[in-house]
Amino acid sequence: MPKPYPREFRSVVRIARDREAGVTVKHIANDFGVHPMTLFKWLRQADVDAGVKPGVSGGESAELRKARRRIKLLEQENEVLLPRCRWTVAMPGPRLRPA
Picture (cartoon, rainbow, N blue to C red):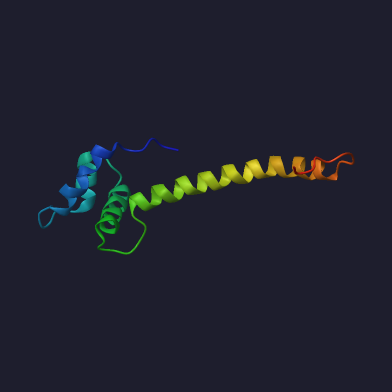
């Protein structure tokens, strides 16, 4: 996977929005050494973050990634602990009684 551009580099979005008539997004992307599709994606995400277009904002996206990671970890822990729990319950022998 290619290395992402630094957050500060995305100021090119502001420049692309404030461009003069006749200057294309492709031209601006080439001037900054960014692929035009990357700049279009940044512009689209900026619209979502500003509430102009519907979609998941950058902050919400980060929260979702964090939640998915946490769910995956909990599922893995459950896979390890569940068989041990079943084995313990199935073992014959004396049980501890509540006091």
